[in-house]
Every structure is written in structure tokens, then in C-alpha cells.
Image (cartoon, rainbow, N blue to C red; front, side, top):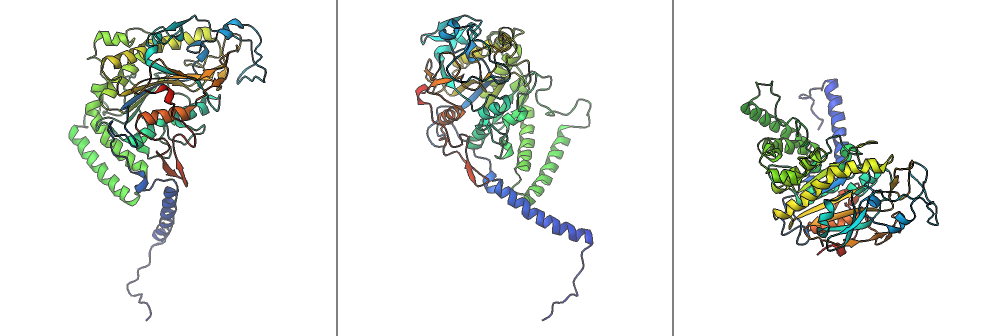
Length: 483
């Protein structure tokens, strides 16, 4: 029977093209989302996981604070004592193989300008640049032969944060958020406290959720800025904005966004935006209290060095980090040093003048954080990590500076599950390359996830046909530093 066209109404040309293009675009968009692992069934935010269960085995760590020294902290001027380097200072560096310098020429061997002493019952050598951290060595476990695939800031920072030297991959904080979820309904799961002078190398790429749902990226809060959280409250001159109008606006946004989300269920950006609106409303009540240090005692502020100009900023960040951990933030990353040629740990010009400024800004706050967590009983379920993207060369650059060195650097951990006073790995006699029990970001990340109750080989996310993980295809738990 021939089809009847009595009820047929031709579409206008623009409507016809829109439907055709929109339909094909929708198919293509859905396909791309599927390839990226961003469809609704794969992008769901993980439920909350408490301390005792973990994901794969019983956890020892509930929360983490990571202290990142941006720029490449010099291991041979801080924690890696080398008598041979002191003995041969001023001589030509000739290890019997080709030596290359990243940004300059290879100079003569140069000893540290600072004295070295053994500290604590473990006898750990620490230079005089860190007098306060030296008092905590019996609580710290040192990785003395960390190495990086690169000695370029951007790729090395990506590697230490994400496990890859290129952008686009989730950082450790995002993986932890994805795997374990939140400990608090009123604060973010993963918070980043940058140096007040600016963001580090790679800027926000170090805190990215990569191909994970966007909700797991780091929330940047600036405790040393006049406005720590941008746009949390309306401007003072906007008198027409009231609690009632905000509530009505949020309800309208929620309705419109939900309608849009129903059409595009795999777009994790919108899901993250919805979650951020809801979280921001809760943070209007909780965040001001977290960031208000006026209730802290003078003794506590002094412990963190907030009463001293040199350490005031980093001390406030460390104290804020402790307050966040207390109130349910699972992972806090505190940065020392901004990106660029100065004002960080990238001591090319004159290590004797540049390093003390950075060390003095962090030494007392870091030691204060360790001691404060112990005094408050938080040491038993909190992990502290001190790290950097790579180390420095044992020879001179520009007569008194040190160049980048991916061959060896130092990381230390403290707190829950950590064997205080332990050390694993050793660099060569000059602190040039890792010599025994070398470790990398993969091993560090595997160990951190293990303490959180996560098997690093099982925490995966399907992306572009591969089961991606933080440790890629590498990584071993460093059992020698664990209790």
C-alpha cells in the first residue's frame, strides 16, 4: 500500500540540517566518549571507602599530605652525605664514562657549602641547611636512590605526579580520589596548596584528573592569598545577591544542568560542574572555619614558623593542610616554589645563596607538621611525603651553581605504616647516579597506594582500549621501609 503523505510537513532547511548534523555529531561524540572511557557507567564517582577496609586489603593510611619541593632539591646539599665528594672537591669529575650537563658545561666537583652531622638514633646524615628536619629523622624513612627518566622540569614533574613524562594523565591525588572517594561531605577530596608566588612547572597539569572524571582533579586553595578560594562568596557590592536568591539560582542551574546531562550522560565535565556547585555551597559554611587560623594557639603557630618572615607562608600552608586533614580532606598537596628561573629549588646560579632561602622557608614548617601530627595522635593514620622532581649534579655549574640531575635524588616518608629511621637505596660515591636499590615514581606510588589499602596493579581505568593505571606497567612496593 503506498505511503500516505497527507500528514507530511516538510522541515525548514535550517531545522533539517540541524537534525542531520546534530544526530551525526551525537553519534560521533558518543563514540569519542566511549573511546575515552567517559560514558556514564565508567565515569561514576566511587563511593566513600573508610580506613579499615581499603579497596583490596586492610589500609594503614587514611589521609596523606605531600610536600613537593618544586625545581629539583639538591640531594648532595641536604640528605645525601658523600665524603668522597668533599675529599675531591675542586677536581675534574671523571667517573670513567661520559658526563653530560643539561643546561651548561660540566664543571669541577663541588662539595656542599654546609656542614654535615649525624642525627637521631638511626644516625642519619643531614646537612646544617635543615636543622629542624634533622631532629625528626628517627620518624622518617629515606629513599636514597630515587631516579627519573628525565632531567627536564616539566616532564620530570609530570612523571613524579602522574607516572608519565607527557601531559594528559591523572595525577596520584586524582587516582586516590577516584579509588577511595571522599572522607567529608563538606570539603574536597583532593586539595592543592600552591606556593603564593605562583603555580609550579606545568601549572595545573600536575593536579589534573587526565582521562578520569573531572570531579577528581585537585581543588586549588590559596591560604596565603586575600581570597583563598576564588568566587566562593559574591562580591561585597552585589547587595542584590542573598541566600534566598543564591538558593533559587542554584536550583535553576541544577534543573537546567540535569536536563542537559540527560541528553549527554557521558560528559563528565558537566557532572563535575554539578558536583562543584553543590560542594561550593557546602564549603561556604565549612571552608572559612578551616582556613581561619585565629583559633590556633601561639605555640602552634610558632611550631610551624608562622611567626617568622622566612617561613610564614609555607608554615601557614602546612598548618592549613593539617586542619584540612583533621576535617576530612583525604589528600593535600603543599607546594614550595613556583615555576621559573628563581624563587624555587632550581639552583643553577649560586647554590650557596639560593638554597638557604628555600630551606629556611620550609625547614621549620615541615618539622612542625611532623611533630604536630604526632602530638595530636594523627601520625598513626596519616602519611607525610617529602619529594621533588629530580636532584642536582655533584659538579659545579657557572662556578657555584648545580645543574639538573635525574640520576639520583632523595624522597622521604613518615607516619602510618612507615619504619622510622629506615633508609633504602644508595647513590654512588659522588651522588651522581643511583648505585643500589634504585627506586622511581612507580615504586613510590605503588607503596603509597599499598598503604591506602590499594593494589596498584588492580586500580585501573579503561581508556582508549587500555586498562590504564598510575604505575603504568611498572612499580614494586618498597617493603623495606614499611612496618
